[in-house]
Image (cartoon, rainbow, N blue to C red; front, side, top):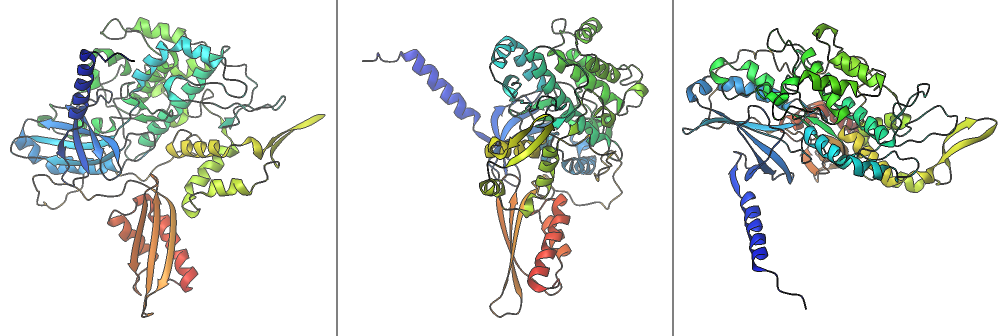
Length: 554
């Protein structure tokens, strides 16, 4: 018979339960009621300028988010610039990239007691890159022992990030990395040990994702300069997806007048982060080269796992020099040194760095097909992968590499797992394998975030104004049906939309003779049922449906 549990232990467990209940208490709600602020505070990489960050619940999607608060002491100055602040955040909400922490919503609170900006951002539960690198370094020996036993065809994993790199190659094939892309093997291996190979593959993937986000920001008109890129403002998901946070900080601090800048604190004020900022920082007008220097320092820290600081003070030049000299791969060293050039004009662009020989690889047909599949997934049934694999002859040859005079190396459908394919498609959809080094420069249709807003007529303001709630999730599947009404006078439209979080949205509408596919798509975007980026493909989809049922557009 088991002995009764000691009373002190039961008391400690009750205390922990009480603390957990306290943390889940709802302290505040957004004006629309969708976002609920909890008592539990979170550390999202010590986001500069934010006085408090709390865990919150998105009651519509059922996921955790971050509730950020930016407080202002001068209420009169805040009220005078309220419209300018609102315009900036409206534009920032439109910045959408898989490797950038999404700003979902914002509102202003100008009550009698306080003046503040509240904004809701993605919650990255795995923490900052700096935290992840520290844990990786701590577990380095255990990881090294684990990697030796993973078996043929899989290089291994890195810490908690589940960062895998498949290696499928036959003798004499001259290719490697068939899962994601291939590259000639004329050069010698980059590293000799299995742990170094794993780390190098993860490092490449991290760098590619960070650069894809920077290339996206720098391609805007005018360019969006992050200006605060450190390993504390880069976050990593459990699946290896990298996300850059704090994009709003520089835009916000630069656009505000001096009397409102007091709460905005820069990471540069912290000694331990000084080494992430270039020598010219604050002395000349900042350009995109500022972000490239910061990225180079992050890339160095990712390569060596940690740059030793002198206690809690700043990282010295000697420590940075030692970290550079410890790099065993000359291509990696040259790549990082080009980013850390003292002359900003000598630093390459984010887009050009994606073509550097240490990162660049020709994308595999599998990856290109996956991106094409995801872009057109809204035209296919939800379980199309499962249905197609059922109809495939598992003994049929999927790929073949000739190698005369020996028999060819063959890969059959039976070697491809449906679950692995679904996971790969999900990783591509989440942005882990971007195609940012596939096309030329990409001027993207983003708002002029840094440009001064156009003059507008003065609008009436409420104490807590809130912009229109637009849809941020994209459509991955569409189905449409038209039926005659009972009186045969008009058509009844039923539209089923499957959003990227698997939410099903069904809409119905009685068509009028004057309705067009373009007008209906624009209306759905306007009322927040559909993401702005889906407007064109929804209009084309509706038009094809009209032609199918009616023979001509109504």
